[in-house]
Image (cartoon, rainbow, N blue to C red):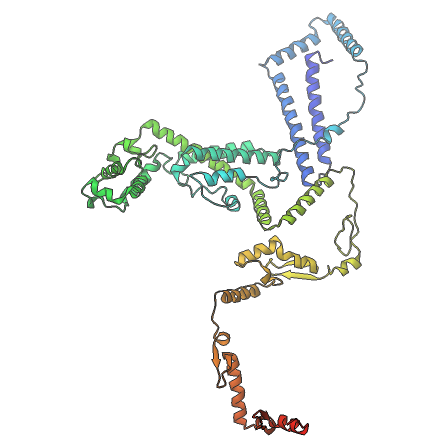
Length: 551
C-alpha cells in the first residue's frame, strides 16, 4: 500500500497524529517524583524530535519547487485521468494493487487498536554523574581545578567558586584575551548547556543564547559594554601608558644604565611588566630597555620592545587591531552566555552550595546513611506496582518504616511531643530529646556556630541561645589567654598568713568589722585557756575535756 507517493504522504500524517496522541496520553499520567518528571520530559522531547523529522518530510512534499511535489502532482493527475473512459481502468488497477498487497501480507490486521504502552513506559537513558544527583546539583570539580591552576584564576575553595561562577570583573583584560581563558569559558559554557538540556529537555535554549549573542555583539560594537568601551582596540597597551605616567621610579634621577642596574633584576622585571615591555634577558638588557623610556612616551618606543599583544594601539597594525577586536568580541559573547545560564540555573547553584556545606559538616557515618537512604528512595521510585494509599493521621504523628503513623504511646515514650528550639539554628524546632541532642553535630547547628565565629565543641553542648554562646566563648578566651580578673585572681594575705582572693578578703574583713563594731564577745568561743602541756583550747572545749577527766 505504501508503494504510491500519496499513500506515503498519508502514512506520514498518520504517524504525526499518533505521536501527538502519545504525548497527550503521557501528560495524562501523573509524574510523582523528580525522576518520573525527568523521564516524562525526555520521552516527550523524543516524540517531538520525531514529529519535527516527519514535518520536514511533509514540508518538502508540499513545496511546489521540490522533486517530491512534482511526483505528488503527477500521481494526482494520473488518478483523475484526462480521458473519462480510462477512469474505470485506473480504478481496477488500484484495486488489483490492493489485493496483491494483502496477499503478500495476509496476517496484517489494521483493525486492532494500537498499543502505546511500550512507548508510554519507555525509560530514556539519563546521563548524569553521581555528583549531579539526577540533575539536582552541578558537578564543576574539574572546571574548579582548572580555574585554580590557571594564571587568570585564583586559589579558592569549591564553595567560593560556585558563588563567583559568573563573576568575571576581577580578571584582568590581558588575561581574558589569552587562549587559556577562552578555552576555560568554552568548556564552562558547554557543560552548562549540556546540563540545562539534560534537566530541561523541552526548553528552547538555543534561541535564548542566540538572542544574548546578538544583543551582546550590538552593545559591543556601540561601545556600551562596561569595561569594553574601547571595543578591545585599546588593549593592555593603554593600561601600560597609564602605568608609565604613574611610575614610582623617576628615571630623571638616573644618569646611566649602570645606575639603573642597582634596582635589581626582580624590580626591573616588575616595572617592565607594568609598562607592557619585554621583561626577559639579563640585568643589563632589562636596565637598557627601561632606560630607553627616559624622556619619551610609550608611543615613541619601537614596537619590538613590547611584549606580545601589549603594544599601544598607535604602534599596532590594522590587522592586529581587528584580530584583537575579534578576540574581545568572542570573550564578551562567551561571558554573556555563561552569565545567562547562571541566571537560569540559579536555583540549582544554590542547592549545590547547600549540598557542599552539608557534606563539609557531615561525618563518614552520616554520609553512608545518606547514601543508603538515596538508594532506598531510588528503589522505591522504581517499583511500579507500589500504590500509595491515603493514610489517616489526624494527630500528625511521625511515620514509621512501613509508611504508617507510629503508635501514640510510642510517640509519648520517646518524648516526640516535646519541642526544643535552638536560636543558633535560626529558631528551628526539634521534636524529642534525642533529635535535640543529635542536632548539635548536624550541619545546621555547625553552620550557625561558624557564623558566630565560635568552634562547635563539647564546651557548648546544650547551649542554644546566641547570647549564652557568645558569653561562654568570651570567658573561655579570657581563661585560655590568661585574662586577669582582680576580684578572683588578685591574692591578699592577712595577719595570720592566710592567702585569700580579693573577694574573700573583703568578705572576711567585712565580717570582722561587723563583730568589732557590735562589740560581740562570746566567752565560750573567744576566751582561750592553756593546759599544763601548753595546749591552747577555747573555754568550752577546755571545760568539756576537764569534766571527762582527760586533762
